[in-house]
Amino acid sequence: MPRTAFLSTRIEPALKDKAEKVFSAIGVSTSDAITMFFRQVVMRRGLPFDVCIPNSATLAALEEAERGGGEVVASSTKNAFDEILRGDHNRR
Image (cartoon, rainbow, N blue to C red; front, side, top):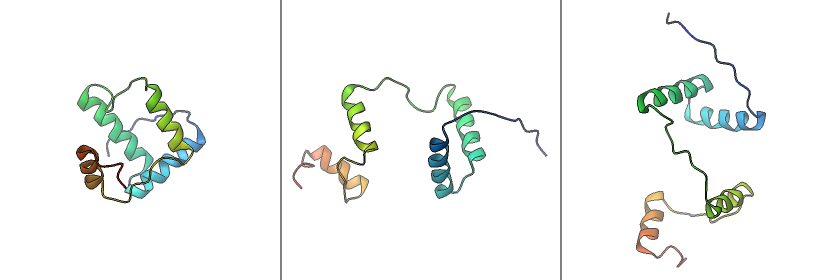
């Protein structure tokens, strides 16, 4: 059996619950998800995502999404992006 290390951290309970629901939906445990994160950090020699300060437009969009607002797109992601690239995403 491989050696294991113990990781103890404090996190907001609501954030933990939300993340665990996502992990469950995709079939991984919290430990598996943390292990994947650590492997990506090692492989990339840094965080596996961009870390930056969002601009005001991005902050407004994030706040709108948290309130349950924003545009709901009834399309595949590919179709939605194709519409955006063609410039006709506002013609609905």
